[in-house]
Amino acid sequence: MVPEVPALTTRITSGSPYQLDKSQTLKASTALLKHIKSKAKRKEASLTTKNLLTDPADDGSDEVTSNSADPIWLVVTTKKHIIDQKRLKPGKILLPHSLNTLPTTTICLFTPDPQRTFKDAIAHPSFPPELSPRITRVLGISKLKARYKSFESRRQLLAEHDVFLADARVITLLPNLLGKTFYKSSSKRPIPVNLEPSRSQLKDPTSGKRLPTSKPVKANSASPRSIATPAQVANEIQRTLSCAQVYLSPAATTSVRVGLASFTPEQVAENVEVVVSGMVDKFVTKKWRNLRAIHIKGPNTMALPVWLAEELWVDQADVLEEEEAKQRIEAGKQKGKRKKREGEEKVLEGESKQKKQKKEKLIDEGFSAEMKERREKLRRQKQEVRDRVVEET
Image (cartoon, rainbow, N blue to C red; front, side, top):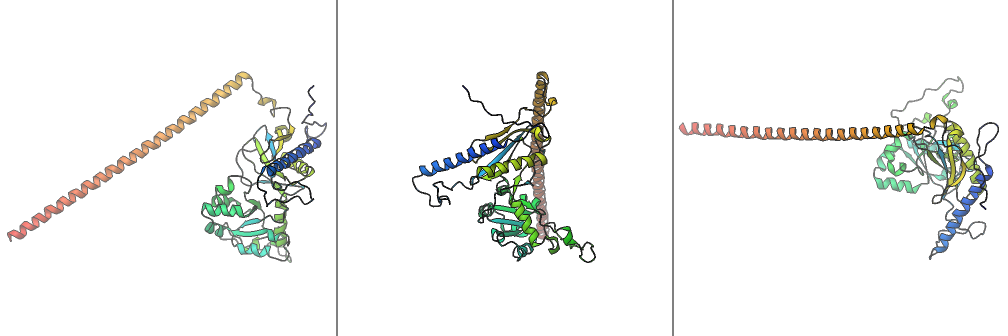
């Protein structure tokens, strides 16, 4: 007899028509973490040489910690695309259990010029002493342009740090300066932080009037008055490190890092619930009606289902009759053929233009050679005439 499988969709009588089942989320988190640890244990046992870089767990158990930094991903699948264009700036959702709490995590901060102002803020006595040693490098835009032009230097910079933060005023300049080395994946993509001062800092405490700010000459530079206080800088960095980064693209699937293999199942489940709630409220159009499935997975594991939708469409109007569906498919094929034909015509037009330019160049070169030959002939004739005149006299 086939055992009954519990439903992964939970309806409620009020509010949203769907919600996560906490027991199912915890069950999936427990199974995933157990699989990751057992897989790492089997891999460690199959090695003929012992890895000296891995130590036993702190509690004295025989579990290895070589996979403790492996990420746990939340995969949200929607019925329709969330957005139409790719966004480089991620959305932020505050997590109850941060992914960047290790004191050994190194941070690189990209800032406007001059970078010395930001270094002084980090070295200020009011800056938290537990956070300042983790910020191992502060790079201004001018230094970034000058020092990291080659592909090898950018790869080295990427390998030297765990987290990259960037002032929101220069975040749009970084794709051209860092290239695909940083932006081909979202694992170490620079995260924007707001390091501008609050409104109270820009007001005179006696008169209450807004202080005149010295506007920077360049867009990537900052005046000392346009920087937040050391305490505010620290609070913004700590808050950003405690958030999940949601990178949206024109696709039906969005992956968000919500945990680590060293987390407990309860911690992963709580982070999953918070991120799903935040994504539905902030980013997903039509809320739960647009969600198709929610899974969690490790870096090299199968995706475990947490929630599945009953309907495969958002509205009844999205469901087409068979004849209408065929017409839409045929129209799409014709559109694709037309675009392909237009592209081929453009290529041929470009080739003919290149041939015409080449022909004109050859004609010009031939004309120049002919003119040169005629001048040389005329010069020789004049010289012969002069020689005859000299002989006659």
